[in-house]
Length: 216
Image 1: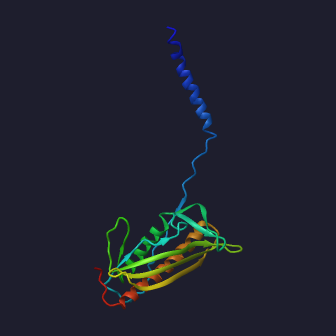
Image 2 (image 1 turned 180 degrees about the vertical axis):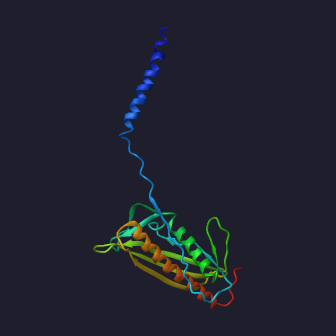
């Protein structure tokens, strides 16, 4: 019988441990709330008339430095610094998000057959659109709301021989109406739609003037 005594005290030990853990719950760090998610939209306002091309355009995922290859929304207070807004994020990694919205922009323009390319896609076009993203952030000045800055370089490359057909630097700047995330993201979306529309027009006009280009 003397061996059963410790067993009778076991429930009391467990109960005491449960109370101890309950007390610790007040001092343990609580998980951070999920960030507010923001997305960009596609350009959709295109002229009714425009030269078209039978060539198929393959849109690769843009390249970017690690600081921009992220879901985090970037801001800059000087030419040499980059930071991020707290508790806010894009709905996808920025390069992948831009590829998706650019593809939708080409589809809305109805001037080229555009294909998205990536790790899960076997799409191949006659011409490849390569984009290097240099700036995509809110820029703060001395005071007041920031302005959204976009800068990227685009290359049209023949899929057959990898020769560059055309290259152009695109930029966009739109001031935010207020210094809050909703207004800042609105300025980012407006700047992006302007740049996307320029890319669509440039690519379609350039390829419409090119001789037949067929991927091997």
